Image 1: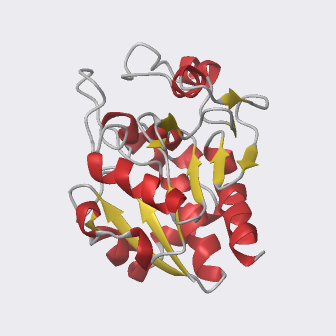
Image 2: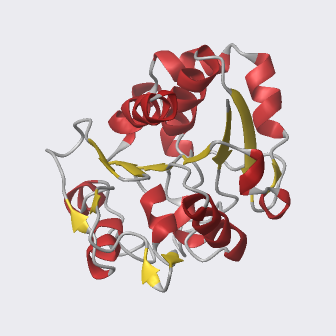
Length: 225
C-alpha cells in the first residue's frame, strides 16, 4: 500500500514576523501509524526538500509519544528533509493522500494548483483523501464535476474557537470552519482540543492536532476494507 503525505512549504505567519509551517504531531502521528502498518510513505511539498516546522509545535508542552519518536529517528528526519516536489506527484502512483496541518497550508496548499488538481484526481480515481486540523483548508478550491468537493459532505477541521484560543483569528488568510461552511460542507465539531474525525464517502477530516492519529487510522481502515 502506498500513501502520499503532502506538507506545506509556507513559513511566514502572515505579517506578524513570526514563523509557521507544518505541525509536528500532525505529521509524526500519521507517519508512524502508516509506517507501523507497513505502508510505503512518500512525502511531498510544493517546494520540495525540507518543509518548515511550526516552532509552536516543537515546544516541550506540544510533545507526544510520536514527536519524541521522530526526534530519535534519523531515518524519518532524513525522509522529511528530502520531500519530493508536489508538481511531480501523480495520483495513479498512490492508494491515498494524507495532508498534515499546521497554519502553513492556509497560505500555500489552499491555492496551490498542483495540490488542488491532485486532490481532484484522487477523488476521480475513487481513492480516499484525508486531512487534519488546518489542512482541510487545502480543500477550499477543490471541485469535482463543477461542485466543491465538500458540498453536502460531513466535514470537520480546526474550529473558529480553537483559532481564537491560539490568537490567530485576525492573522490567518481565512478560517477553516468558515471556509468549509461557505463551500456547502456540513461542518461538525466536538469540544475544542478533543479528538474528532468524520468520514463521508472518500473524504476523511480531523478537527485538531489530537485527531491526527485517529484520522490516519480511519484512513487505514478504509483502505483495508
